[in-house]
Length: 217
Image 1 (cartoon, rainbow, N blue to C red):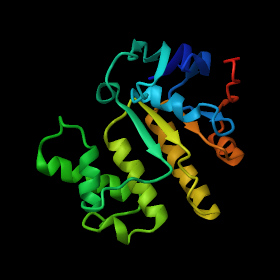
Image 2 (image 1 turned 45 degrees about the horizontal axis):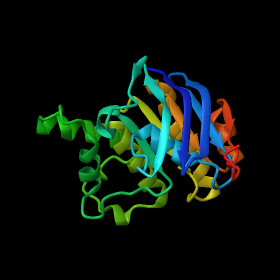
Image 3 (image 1 turned 135 degrees about the vertical axis):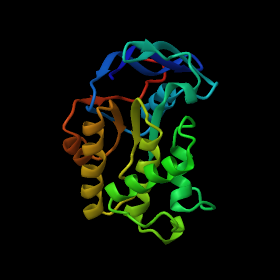
Image 4 (image 1 turned 90 degrees about the vertical axis):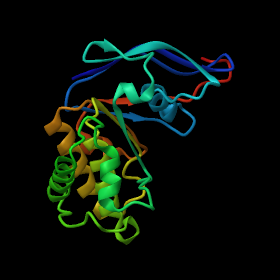
């Protein structure tokens, strides 16, 4: 599975915000997108996920494993998103949060429970299923958020400042946790960050973007 962006330009009120002639992300590779605030990094991720605000205009295409998904709605693209905030549902248990990420095709209750239990064991969170997310540490919440995203079996992964709110020591462990799974599962990933240490840990290509000028240049 590879992700390829071609001839992309995103504009707002005729002003060019993002322009990418071609970017290819190989299976298991993490490409880092860096640039100052206002340079269109999050706008790029929104377009890739299919959630670009209608106020923007975009041309170009994105393919996953050779299939053009540019016109597909978000749920059919199967592109996972991991944000700086974990966005766990406070009214659901840890297991309930993970169940939300499971594919609809997995209907058997015991199979769903087994998939969740296995994911928690892999993340060193065995037995945490009944827990309230509010009782978890920041690192535990981050791991649950990633597990929920991966249980949906995404074909690509978008990381939007995923480690920004973690303390320095925990940040290193979470980088290893995320990047190891991207590599093992063979998922192409695109990461937006301001932290050069994130890019170094990702050990992949770095795309530097600059803010658009008033005349669109």
